[in-house]
Amino acid sequence: MISKLRFDIGRLHTYLEYVPYDVTVSGLYTPETLYAGYDIQHPESLTFTYDQDVYRYFMESGKIPENPLEALARSLHDHCVLKGMYELLGCYDKRKVVGVMGGSAMLRTDPSYRQIVLVSKKLTENGTLMVSGGGPGAMEACSLGGRMAGRTMAEVNDALSRLAEAPSDKDERYMDVAFEIAHIYPQDEYECLSIPTWLYGHEPTSPFATHIAKLFENSVREDLLMTITYGGLIYTPGSAGTMQEVFQEAVQNHYLTFGFASPMVFLGKKFWTEDMPAYSMLKNLTETGRYKNLLLTLTDDIDEVVRVIEDFQKQGENCD
Image 1 (cartoon, rainbow, N blue to C red):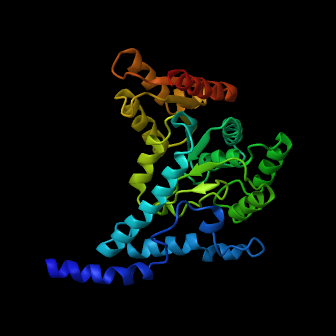
Image 2: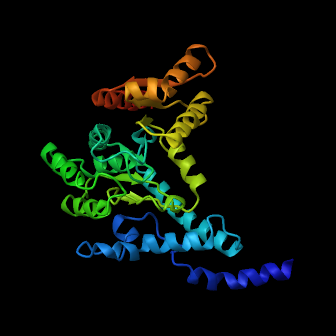
Image 3: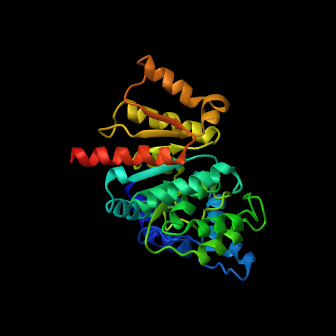
């Protein structure tokens, strides 16, 4: 056993040089580093970017790798990315980190998409670091809001109008239009974070976030989205994954896992009381005492969303 372990360690250096990803990546990705190799003048080049090279290799070597060297290489990569992420988070008060949850199938032309963009924009401009899962739909809308922080409403409307040319991530020009917007509207004053994963590499990672913590381990990614967003979570229409995130966060708040409960804001009254009545269920469980410490808000008003989050942030200031 000892001799075999020494043999594997001896092979490790060679293996780490072989993989198509940087196992000691220095911090977080940016759209430029994740999509290295993409030329906006040649859309077909998207297939040969760093991101897509890694995704192909990820699928070929197995979502759950049998090779222990591959497992170690992925762990080293994710460790370095997470180190960069926590350095970024260290620049923000805990209550100033807020997440948006919602469906990846949400179209760019959906009214909910626009609502998320505006909420994210307003909160970002007030010093909040907005966090999403990094994919399409509601996640992209969150990152777009962060990118458009400091811009005029005319510029926001222009971006949304351009994106409407390819509303679904199944559209051929979906990513090309996104890169065009990112090029037209650069962002160097405000920050936003996305945490995508190669497990869902078939979902394009949005180039709108200024910082991208792309990981191999989706279970780590899912937990992070719940645990680092001390400032609250904004739930928008989604499906099974969003529902999972609702109750995962409810458990953390119920047990005060991190010392205090954070707001759970449900944007879309009809959806959260009729289509997927998660809010109604949590409200009932809270009123009957089965769940405790839940700070629940149900609204269709984006200004109320912003107000609830900012009031919670002010409560933190009063406690310091």
